[in-house]
Length: 159
Image (cartoon, rainbow, N blue to C red; front, side):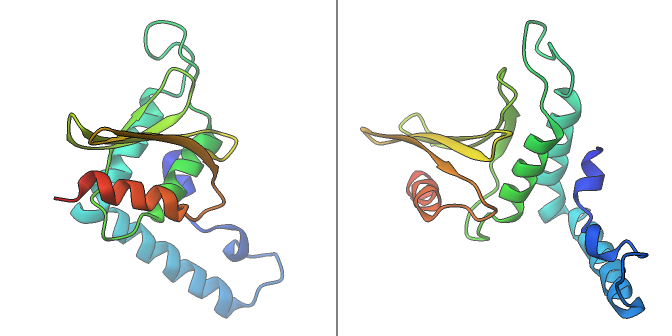
């Protein structure tokens, strides 16, 4: 699966599956609008960064050692995470880990940082340092970002 494929809402609008021509037309306009949105500077940057990370890390040993490849399902989970970030949050830096997870990181300074790792099993693993407090754990990811994780990101980036 290419990164561009994951941006398209395909199943209900692919035709030949019992959907009306109007439904197929709406799906076409949705896909075109979404594609245009992804190409803007505001939205394009993090999505392009995610796509580049996926491309660069989609083979075994991408780090020159024994790193696991990023699976398409991990990319898809990360894409859904990025699409569901509240607009009140700045975009994170995006990277990959040797275990095949995709990471999102918000960094304010040495004492205010959070890293969220997304697994192919739809789990979010997070670790944060907010002043002298450490926060870490995991949450299942069902398409919506858990409020606890959003709150942690807000605490890291607040002035």
